[in-house]
Amino acid sequence: MIRHSVIFSLKHAKGSAEEQSFLRDAKILATIPGVEKFEQLNQVSPKNDYAFGFSMEFADQAAYTVYNDHPLHVAFVRDRWVPEVGKFLEIDYTPIA
Amino acid sequence: MIRHSVIFSLKHAKGSAEEQSFLRDAKILATIPGVEKFEQLNQVSPKNDYAFGFSMEFADQAAYTVYNDHPLHVAFVRDRWVPEVGKFLEIDYTPIA
Image (cartoon, rainbow over the protein chains, first blue to last red):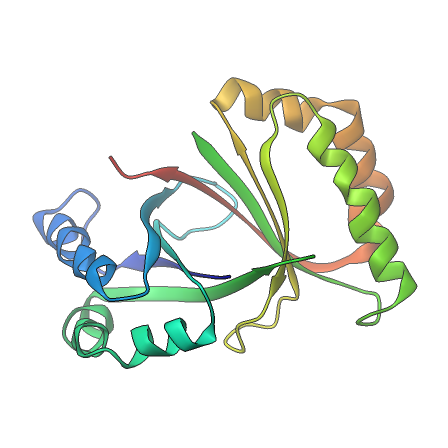
């Protein structure tokens, strides 16, 4: 299992219609084959300045690659992520046996 | 629900006995009342240079506070975390409704 997550902030104002649109439209990512346990999260720790997180799980690297290369993911990154996200950090976890 | 996590790297060499000792002894945190779904994780994305993650969930802020103030947590941070961890970032998530 690979848990892929990204912690990020948007360029949009907190609580704005643009923010809500981004989060709503990002749910398309959950429809890509192989995506499990898709979550949208508020980042609430005062110890960093990111505002949101997305998290999902893949059974293996093959499923992760299918996601990365999927046209829906490629289009979302190009059309929404790049123009609307201010800062982000990708984190990928595997369980310690 | 609050998902508390920390992404970090150790000062110890990768695969060292000291690294294994740290990870093993950190499991004491899972015994603190209110800690749910405690996980130890390898960070495998090449897009950041952290090596590990811990993740746990609390039912609410009260349970989180019990954990933070618990003598086992306070002692672990003082005796192991501060001297052995090189860099870290705390992330706290709550679900977006």
